[in-house]
Structures are given as structure tokens and as C-alpha cells.
Length: 453
View 1 (cartoon, rainbow, N blue to C red):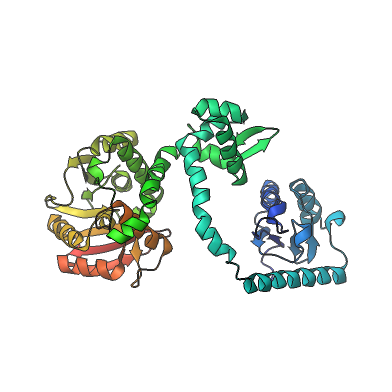
View 2 (view 1 turned 120 degrees about the vertical axis):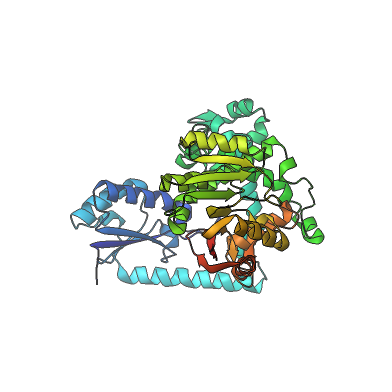
């Protein structure tokens, strides 16, 4: 069966540095050029490209196979993309100068490279070498720290379209030598380019990390910069069983709070539409958003239902930022704010929906039981609670994002953690909720819902 006219398989296997392979020879740029050319010629419904592992011609990449023709190309560069698409995919004429024509020689080369690869694996294993993926986990902090330092210093804004290391160093107030080493590392990570001693941002770094970028995320990412010091104390936190850094959220300073709320707003805004669609906004006239932060979810619920009025309940020092986001959305008439402490205050009564997002992981099991009991009391009969959070399996080992985030709570809170579905079900039932349900969403968090009897 051939549902498409052509199916292209392009090797993009990542190998250790210094080992011949398509990725090291620029396969990503070739793939990008092919995809753009196919789209430009209106062939996306007829041609599919799939990146794949090694096809055995590692020293002559980037490699590409075109099916159903069975044509094997090698050494395909970005500038070859237009010719392959026009000549082969549109007119049925393979580009002869790039084609491997000798099937016997091709099969022999594939077998030779396979045998060399397997022999190398056996030799590494015999020598007791650590697997590459494990080593990458151990060294993963290096990539992270390079990017976080660049964000902290606002390097991408300073670099712009074409700037030398000396100019960047002067702009950010840093040492020239250190700045150039950082810029070179960012080039190696693919977030900058370098040409003749001048550096430039890539489309990704321009979009997300430069001031005024289309989706400038620097303010939100500064929250991750701030987490670095706490994660560096993970060993001590494991020994102590919780955060050893001290200050609770209300006392961490305005800079930390602004970056935290910016990060939460960005995360919530990206997921709000899916959450509202899954939870449902119809039939809701009064909504309480417990610990609502920027108000992103309240805004989304109100936009989905013109009859809905929401109230964002959060700390006094958070709410000025909340009101700024609400004003920017132009929805002040239907989204209000109320100061209070979600750990202890009474929430009121008569709400059709109580929404609790990214709150339960900050609290201990006992605090969550108390919180959900007060949420139950705040609901009108048949009112609903919707919890949006990381929800772990029974063993608390998956999903990976939730298990890692539990450690984030270990280093950042007194008793917070990610919790399992069974724990949420137990707490909700204990509070008096029925019709308890888990709603799975794409991404790291899910919903737990319940109805007041």
C-alpha cells in the first residue's frame, strides 16, 4: 500500500562527537531545506519525510532514501534540496550525481559499517565504558548552565544580527575572554551562529530569548535561572528531607516573585485552552481560582463562557501582577481578585467551579486534605472541583516530568511533592466528593475532577 506518492527516509542519528555520521555532517540543515522546498512546491500532501537512525553509509552522509523508487542518495547538502524535489519528486528523474547506483557495493558498505559499529560496541563494553546516554545524563547540567547564563546576562539581545565577542562583552559588562568562550559554546549548542568572528542569533533564540522577540520567554525563564542554586543543594535536601534554603514564597523577594509569576503565566497560557476544553466551562457562573497566580486560567475560562465570573484567590503581593494580566486581557469586568492564604483561609461559598492548578504539589498530604475540604465547602450543590497538576503512577516513577518535579518541590518547599492518582482519589473522597475522575491531557499535567454531593 502506498498512501503517498513518495516517502523519504533521512538519517539523523546522533552519534558521539568525532564519530562519522549524518548528523555531524549537517543532516538537520538538509532536512530543513527539503521540508521547506516540499512545502513551497505544494507537495506536503504527496510527500512525507521521516527522520531515522543510521542507514549504514555513515562516512558519506547526509543520506536519504526515496521510496517507492528505492533510490539511495548520499552527500545531500541543503543546496541540493530544490533539485531533488523538482527533478525527482516532480518529474521522476533522480539526481544522478548523488545516487548510489551499485547495489552490490552499497550492500557491502552497509554491512561493513554495521560490523564496525557492533565491534566498537563490544570493545566499549569489554573496557567497561559507560553508555553514552548515561554519560549525557551526568553531564546534562553543562548544556543547561550555558543557556541559563546566557539568559541571565541577556546575551541573545546583545548579540542580535551580527556582533563580535568584544562588543557583546561591553554590552553585558563582562570579560571579553569569558564572553567569547560562552558565545562559542552557544554556537555548539545551535543557539547562535558564527561567521568570520561575528556572532548572530538563530531563529529560535531570536524568537524566545531576545528582548521584543515574537514569543520572548526570558522573563519566565529567569525563574529557572533562580532554581539553579536550590537544585545545587539537592544532596543536602535529600539528607534533610526538604528545602534547606529557608524562605517561603511570600518572603523570597520581588525579583523572584516576578519571574515566578511570569513563568507560571507562560506555562498556563500555553495549556489553558486544552484545560478549559477538557474541564468544560458551560453552566458555570461563579468560579474560584485558588492560588491562581497570573489569572491565566480564570481569563481562559471567562473567555470561553461569557456568563462566567471568576475570582482569583492569592497572596496580597501576587495580586498586583494578576490585575496587570487581567487588564491586558481586557476582561476586568468578569475576573476579580481576592487576597488570602490558601493554606488557612475560608474560601466562601456558592461557587459552581473551584479550580486548583499547580497548588497541591506545594503542600503536604495533610495540607492537601485540609485544602480540599475547604474547597468542598466553597462549592454549591453539584459544584465541581478541577485540579490541574502532575499526577504520578502508583509507584511514583512516571511520568518522568512528574517524578523530576517532585524533586523540584523537595529542594524548593518544606513538604511539597508530586502525588499519585490514588492519593488524589483518596483525598477527594475523604473531602466528600463523588464522580471522581482523571482526565488525561497531552503534556506533563493531568486533571482530577470531582463533584460535590
